[in-house]
Amino acid sequence: MLGDWRHSGSRRGGADLAAAIELHVLDGRLPVGTRLPAERELADALGVSRTLVGAALDRLREGGLVASRQGAGSWITFPRGGSGLQVHAGERLDLIDLAHASPSAVPALLPALDSARGLFTAELLDHGYGVRGLAVLRERVAARYTARGLPTEPGQVLITNGAQHAFALVLRTLAGPGDRVLVEQPCYPNTPEAIRAAHTLPVPVAVDPRDGWDVPGIEAALRQAAPRLAYFCVDFQNPTGHLLDAEDRERLGAALARARTPAVVDETMAELDLRDDASPVPPLAAFAGEWAITVGSASKSFWGGLRLGWIRAQEDVLDRLVAARWSLDLGSPVLEQLVLAELLADPDPVLRGRRAEVRERRDAVVAALGEHCPEWRFRVPEGGLSLWCGLPEPMSTRLSVAAANHGVQVAQGSRFGVHGGLERWLRLPFSLPPERLTEAVRRLGVAAASVVSTAPVLESPAGAVT
Ligand SMILES: Cc1ncc(COP(=O)(O)O)c(C=O)c1O
Image (tube, rainbow, N blue to C red):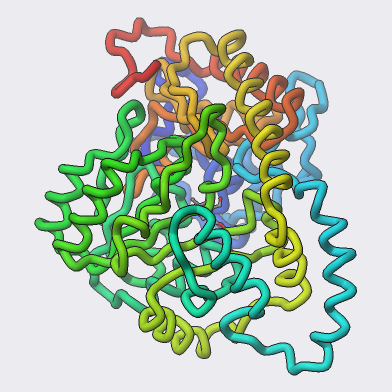
């Protein structure tokens, strides 16, 4: 788990090891209560002295991240100062959260809640269990697809508790233990997590930071790996922001049909098109037909706290998903569905406001990077909620540890790799207000300067982009 924890050229062995363990705790990969190996065992595994391990554990104990008892060993505890305040050089900093690419709620949400309340009374007379979701919401989701160029009937829509729930439901219904699932890399981290949790095997296909999807490569992977299922996020991909054009959609749709491989098309970011002259690209399902199982979400367009999403699929596939849902959760909350139905009654003005807000935030990050991190390379994304930054050297993990000490929580590149790696990359979400983003990037610049290697860097970042 610790991988390349030692900062090259650093003499701070104990501090570096403590920082690497701390990152795993902050990241949730070492949950509270996890028992650590004995000092001798850890020293042997890492090829370092027991003194160094002892120094690292002392630091972690001082910070309240580790507790030890004679004879019982050491384990992870709750960090002291979990109040969101970080201390750096005596200065107390408020923590800026760049670990989530999720904006706060749209202003239209409260008025939608007020209208929904009026409709709620009638719902109270019913039993409240609706495994497919409220009819009014399914109609409005279907109407939105039809407006986007994909004629859809309400009977093709299943309301879920978010896109992640939708993906997990598709996985458990259409794939079984040992099946291969094709997945993009870099990728939204919870996708490979869900694939592994379903005891299926992720097979990564690369998304190039500059050029996006390699469709001939995907065609070859479909032939060679014969996956049971594929996953693509072709509308402003998380983390790269790429959009697959219509020509490549047609080719990808044909490849899925030829291989008879169903694909989950994750449209979580689809409404966050930040192009000025946007000529919308039709949904992938318009090209892939029955082979596309489209997953959508209210989380980025309106608010993550609604915890609502949906699946659009052929009716026979939907019936199988509904049957599988009976053993899982029996439906989604009614009041939230009414709120979302209100928002979708006339979504265009709300979405226009959301896009303007996100565009301003993206531009603020781009400007701040130019000022504070001029060596970082990136492509300005046409949509979505994040920049995928090429760093001057493989330092993403070290940088995110140092960033936490400067009051910025950010996910290192390896989180977006199916099997780790991606140390030269960092995802920068732009879902906070501009001034917070500018301050976060300023702090990241300072953190980066503290961890960048002093040795000359001979290579440029792999796949560096402009
Ligand atoms: C690509 C992608 N898919 C799915 C999700 C999860 O969405 P939801 O909140 O609807 O479960 C996210 C959230 O960040 C995402 O970025």
